[in-house]
Image (cartoon, rainbow over all chains, first blue to last red; front, side, top):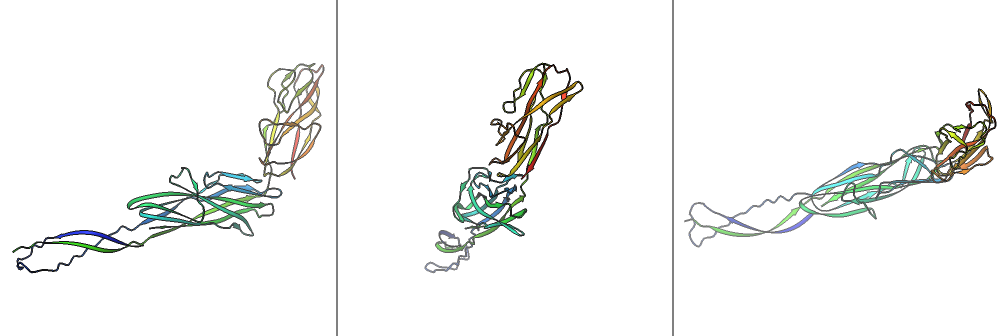
Length: 185
Length: 172
C-alpha cells in the first residue's frame, strides 16, 4: 500500500564548523532523512482440517452429514456416523496491520475416483480459539487491527454439509480442499 | 564566529508499505462405507431366578423386566441392539427352544420378546406371537430387543433347567 504521510519534523542542526561566515551570509544545509515504516506482516496457520469421520450409506434414499462451523458438532440425516469429527480451523495473526481480509473458496463437491458428493461449506470467526464463533456470510471477511506496533490474532472455523449420499455412491474416501488467502495492510 | 542555524523542516514523505499476503488450504475428508448392521448383545441370558416347584406359570416380562413368583436370586432379560444407517432394513428371526432341560427333567418354555424402536431405556413394545419380524431403522439408527418368556412349573423336580434361544439378524 502506498500512503502519503505528512510528518512535521523539527530538526535543529548545530553547525559547529569554522567561523568563516559573517553576519548577513546564508548557507544551505542538506538534510537527509530515512524513515523506516514497519511493514505489515501476517500469517495463516491451519490448526485442523475438516474431517467428517466415517459414515455408512443409507440402505435406501439419500442421507447427509454436516459439521457446524459455529459449534463444531456433527449431525447426520439417514446415515450412521462413526469415528471422530473435526471442524476445520485456521488462525490468522499479524503485526503492524491496520486492516486485513480473509477470503475462502469452498469446493463444490468432495470427490473420489468414480464418484462425487455435493458439498456446501460454511464458516465462522472468533477472537478466541475455543470461544463463541459467529457465522460469516459471503466469501470474504474483513477486519481491522491497530496498525504499527501492534499484533492481532483471529480464528476461523470451516464446516459444511455433504449431501446426496446414496447407496450407489462408491465406497471410499471423498476429499476436497478449502482454499484460503489473507491480505494484511 | 560561530553561527547557529535553526531550521524548521516540514517534510512531505511518501512511504510505501507493501501489504502482506498469505495463503493456506484446509483439507476436507469423508470416508464412506456400505450400510451394515451392527449387533450388540447387552445381555446374553434369560434367567428366571429361583422359583417354587409348583409356582405354576412364571412370567418374565420383556417390557417391564419384572418377573412373577420369584423366591430369590437374580433374574435377567436377554437383550441385544441393532445399529446401522437410518432406513436400514432388517429381519430378526427367533428359533425358540420349546423345552428347558435339566438333570431332573424338562420345563416348558414360551418366548416373550419386545422391541424398542430407538434404543431408549423405556418404550418397549411386545412382539406377541411373532417369531420373525421385519423392520426399518429409524432416524436414531438403533433398535433394541429384549427377551423374556414364560415357564410352567407344576410339581417340578428341584434342579437347574436350561436351553438355548437362537436369534438370527438378517440385513435386508
